[in-house]
Image (tube, rainbow, N blue to C red; front, side, top):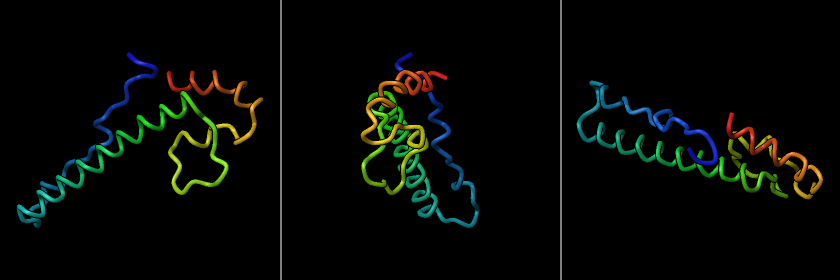
Amino acid sequence: MGLWPYFRRRACFAIDRHKLAYLNAFEKFNCLFCRYANGLIACVGEVAARTEQYWCPIRHARRTRQPHQHYDAFVDYGDSAAYRRQLPRLRAALKE
């Protein structure tokens, strides 16, 4: 086991559209490719989010467009006291 528990990659992938009878073979292949690509991006995003929470759980100075699910727990930009105080808790939260 690494820095945090294993997460189920299967949760990132929902490959089921190939079962739809009203799609032709080309459409089914396109659905398979898109779902795989989006699932892969979701898995990479989760790994990156957990890495950010472990090493640098600080909000950005400006608002980000679509922050990941861990972002709300991060400390405010420029708050060094909160960073030092909350870093152990944020790292421990990854192990739960």
